[in-house]
Image 1 (cartoon, rainbow, N blue to C red):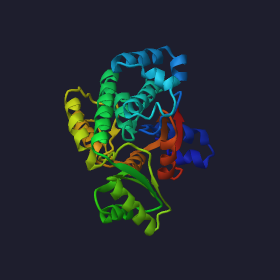
Image 2 (image 1 turned 120 degrees about the horizontal axis):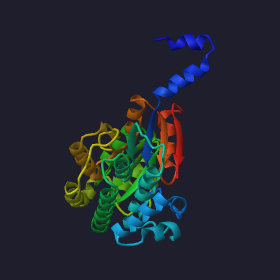
Image 3 (image 1 turned 60 degrees about the vertical axis):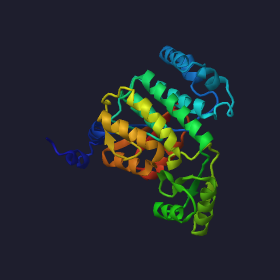
Image 4 (image 1 turned 180 degrees about the horizontal axis):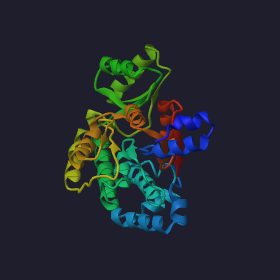
Length: 316
């Protein structure tokens, strides 16, 4: 084979571009709760017969017209967990289903988005994925009502410093989302989170921002929800995905259905290791990231983690 550097030295840059493209790996990433927005999915519904059919099938599966809330509802209407999670899942998964060029080399999703990623990659059918999301949302909503908790974003501290702060605070508070370097979300009992925020500021955090959430997601306080979701996961058929799925709990690529199920269940009470997930995808060759779904949060996080080394865009 001709050495590609011969073409560089001879000025044949088009060959190098073609060569690089042939080795490019595309990673699709799927957003989690908080990405919802009024009107989400409406344009997709109105402009694609395939999307319309899937949205209307979703209304039947859920037993209520979630499309009315997505297309016509207010921000407050979309805040309820039982609505938010299936709405984001539907927007993301139907987008992927309607993309002719959807040929992922790898996928990942942030929290709820992991179910979107699994469904888009064929590990779950559309119907089973939606039913699991609905079961997850219901279990988490009930848990939030019976086991109060909250979350906060700590900005400007290393991960290790945030972990130290959580250990030093009174009560139960843990790192919940390792979003990127210098941005970690903590989760737990309200007073413990308040104390951790004060300690974080005292050791140099730029900001410690309480989040408007209904519970302590990705913390041990979600154990009742994990137990309930476990029954739904065990009753669901998982298949081998068409590409590796980088899961939140391990940040590693998985294709084995039993491993995927175990990690998906553990996710409810474990931190989302997003920084490590994206870093591992980069190491494994991803140089193009596409966020599928509402919002641009993941695009911003990937940009920070990749330090400009990847092509990053979104579809909504």
